[in-house]
Image (cartoon, rainbow, N blue to C red):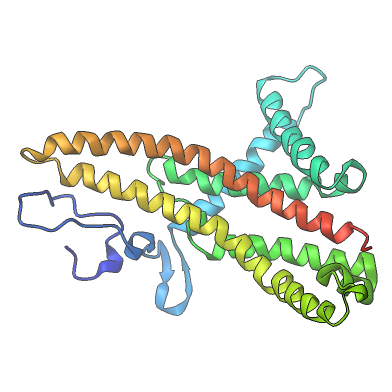
Length: 273
């Protein structure tokens, strides 16, 4: 194995069972990449995850631009796919959660958020890339921060300072002294815990999924020696199963992320009683 674990992104290709080397298990080093440009020590660099995020953004923008640059009454295949995806988020998420009247203005934001998250997740199973950008906590954190800023700003804009406090804390005088304790708990939960869990939910699922894929992929190669070949076949089947399962999880996590975003926005628009 390499002396510096941060330089080992997956596994040593010459290491097999019965060769006298231990199993090169995936770990945190599997999520670290050398800079493609710049110096990592100076914090001014460009690495693989940044490249994938940039390429993903270009792909999403390019896809919708190509689909809608010349919209037709009878849509072609590309326009039909784009309209189906857009309409699914608009009607199935935004309208169902926020409502048609209040939710229409937030449709572009939620659609962009969904497809960006989904694309960043999909990189995990795309050959050559094979890495989910959202398994790096900084990306879900920034996305959750965008939702958080939107929610807080909208809450204060809609209800004013006093109304926003009631909206966020659910303060109710009829509860007596307990109302203040309940308000403090809700304030802590909504302003501090909510954005944290919003980001971590996406990050943790993609981190775990990628780790499992790496584990079975590395095991398939590691066992490919002698009698271990039979076990390598079983491990390779698990790679296929996990890949299909990841396809499902990637879409679900993108859906859950925007569904929660819509729930927060709906809460900001709701009148406190």
